[in-house]
Figure 1 (cartoon, one colour):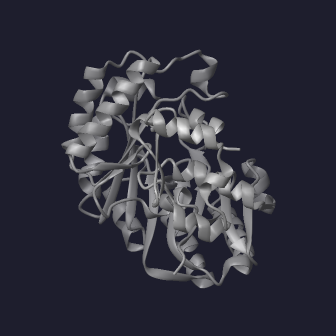
Figure 2 (cartoon, rainbow, N blue to C red):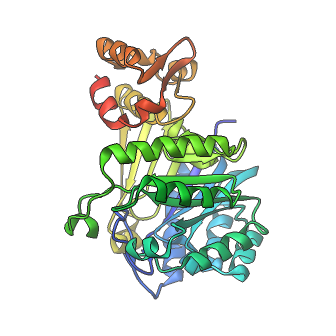
Amino acid sequence: MINFGIYIHWPFCRSKCPYCDFVSLPAKNFDFDAWKKAYAQSLKFYAGQTADKTVTSLFFGGGTPSLMSTDLVSFVIETIRSFWTVAPDAEISMEVNPCSVDREKMIRLKQIGINRLSVGVQSLNDKSLKFLGRLHTTEQALTVLKEARTIFPRLSADFIYALPGQSLNDWQNELQAVLELNLKHLSLYQLTIEEGTFFYKKGIQPAEEELAADMFELTDRLTYQAGTERYEVSNHAAAGHECRHNLLYWHGGEWIGIGPAAHGRFTKKQQFYATAQSNISSQWLQSQTHEEIVLTPKEKAQELIFMGLRTREGIDRAAFLAQIGQPPETFMHAGTLQDYQTDGFLICDSKGIRTTAKGLMILNALCRTLLK
């Protein structure tokens, strides 16, 4: 069975975080009936192209999808079940913020089908939480995590480090506190300042590059020692607790994206399709505006290389050849590939091509110069 996922984007938050460059809007009141209709129409459209596939993962992201009513979440899940075959062990994830769920809502989410929760904690320091524009406190986050682990079989939490003024020792102390929570999945992101965000407009700068590299290495070491090994640039998990849906993205799998600004990738009649939904929420709500283009084999190959190098396993040579019909080296500059191996950034062997921990720290630059 080929893995196939569905991503549902909910574009609303209670407030816009100053570092966030995702398509999200602050809002308080929602016309859930209108969103039911829009989601149903978009799902029906894509079911017409992919109904032969079996859904192995479903991911509610945002925004803050925990602001959706449980009735709407249930409606989306049941609509998907009416259009596709859903695998009995399908992973059904939802992102939540600590201030938008309580025990009662989490129990209800579990009852309607959510079996994996991803909690946007971001920090265990109240001062840092305030700087990051988060509406919850450390105490609230810890309470949600404590209750969530008694409800959901799979639980993850997000944290951000390399903040302005944060020392290596500060992050080490916080990371040790995070690891003591004994979570089986962690997403640990370095703060990046993206154009258009409030932090960008204010000239906020993250930790200096050398310090950030030291923090990355520390994170790698401590999470490995704790049994939550890195399996992607910013994601760490105990064996068997990796996010199956995100693995679709990184391993070149297929999924459809539903909702404003959602993207998708799937094959149809032996062609690679890329889809993009309108990033204007009001426009998408009215007409589910989207674009659909056919990717050339070269474009698909470049995506497979860039995403594959983010992961611990890297690019699987046999799988790449099966999808593209040519080995990955065909799409790389031979001299640059050799240099990166010599310098310890890449490992290339009969199994495939993998990025070392050293290489991950320059991944974007590495790919820019490596790909033809």
